[in-house]
Image (cartoon, rainbow, N blue to C red; front, side, top):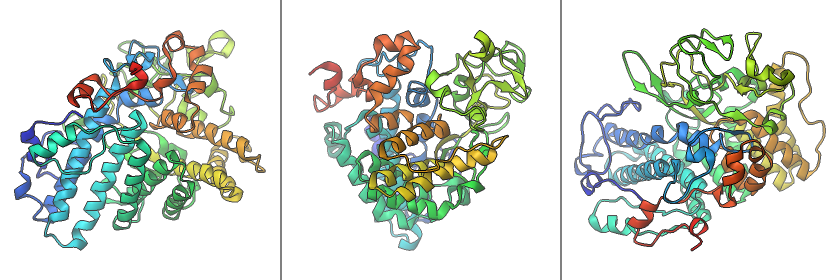
Length: 506
């Protein structure tokens, strides 16, 4: 893995005195590990450092790979990720993800080691320890979901000997990594606040994120009882989904009560500027110098934005929605304030929709999207619970969980509709309904590709949907694209410990 210089490693981690501002990129001071972890504030600062790589990961490159090149959408772009031209020599977003996720792992390991040896009272430092352990699990969850088996280590890299050992680690089976992380999270989750994330000052990690990660990884490993137990804990904390309105799913609405995990971004003319370019790939085409987007004036978006070629929804995805499903007008865009966009009206009204206002960034300046990135929500947890219960034969729990999500859509529809399942359709049909409901509810939340791979339907899903619409995908797609290759530069650094046999045939 790409590690920092040994000087930086021996300094342990980026630790800064302005510990409450996750979005500030430059630390105001650097402190070596030997002089740190002596107070609660220093411990908190060390954990703040573990958050930092998240904003280099959850951005346009990852969302294109996990949402924009799936059964739900494609991107007509020269990007190697969009065209599926990735290889070990040209790994696309995989290079940045590898570097930044392992930076997060390294920061977490240093923080965890420092907290454990700290003389600060156990009652004060326990939640920070659990917070760092949960963030480490986020990074390894991303690594295993993206690359499959990866080098797995939890040691603090505080010597040349440890550095050399880590540099030569081979892949560890992804199931083994996930099992280890689950055990670690289970051992520490009770130390975290048992509250919704939005109820925590600064929207720091709370127990629901740890439970969500346990459930996500348990689903990968087909440990449905483990996942179910964790998801029921989330349900105890979050309660009735109906209390959370769909408007809160818009990315512009930050840190809303339904959210379990959002990555924090901000844009200000005079203050913090920590942004993505995500909205640039989800906004209708714009007439230069105006606030006119595909023939419709949208004052809230303004005239300063410069969106790119937009991600295009697949015919399959567009066909999943009832025309009166309120989520259709949130995730897709056919109209704005009652005015029709031009593209959807093409070919006698059968043209492609745009991606919807869920993703738009009001007042965006040039390419700077200051929206938070929503990663995990309570609706996601309920649909996972429905999947687990279906696998375990608990049909009542399966039905109540999926219908909670469908009921909210029913209640917000502009005319009376019945989206809820009236009766259990059988295990296979119910599973298909879960897969489709996850698309209708969660598109754009950094998980669709991971779901398709986890369900072992990735290749068929791509070949039957976007490969029929985007010629580059049809030509370039290979089943091994379900996982990204480890970048060649990392393979070389490992001196042969790492390899990409599916990509290289060796």
